[in-house]
Length: 260
Image (cartoon, rainbow, N blue to C red; front, side, top):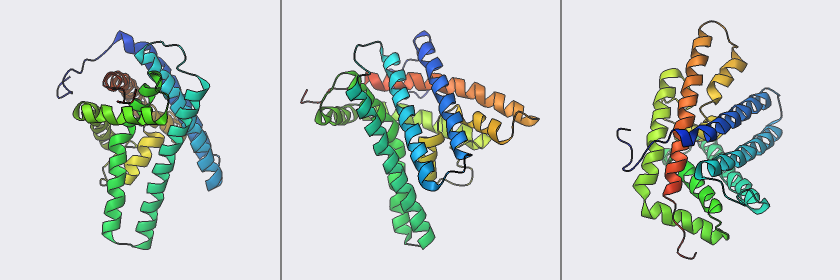
């Protein structure tokens, strides 16, 4: 894989079963998301529904990660399940706060410096959200118990192998962004680079199986859309396989905290 982080090796057979589970999870999430979006809920009910849905998706992603890293007893205990849900709730709150801040700054016509700070925060979240989440899941998988051990292991891992971990994710993110820009996907920057919008789309509708399901809901399998849907299905399958390799790669870079 050209320009991949040093030592990165693509896995094939080991990624097949986790990829199948990830495809089912992504499709189920996408269908439920579109159904909730078309249900004309109030803003508060819609937010609650999206929060519950994303929490369930995060739990499913943790299960897929454990499959990629190998079977291990106790990885889906009640305590770890609660921690996964709490972790995803934290990121939902962060994304929503930054999104609301962006809307407030734009609508109120506040200083461009404030807008720049909001965009920088959104950019940092894009960079660290996925790697930090995978390292958090890996810490739970390795039976880190206290919050100090878990967060400490994330810090130690990022500090010891920052370029290896972040480069692997950023390469994949740039590939996704370029593709979506060419084909008007959710991570498109055709109309300009808006870090806040990219951040929100990455969190809620960034999974590679989402766009073709959205097209089915919006336009149905008609005319030229059939070819676009087929194209995005194939793209989604490829990206899911690449995501499984990213999970394996970042998981291999996990380091226990010094307190363990």
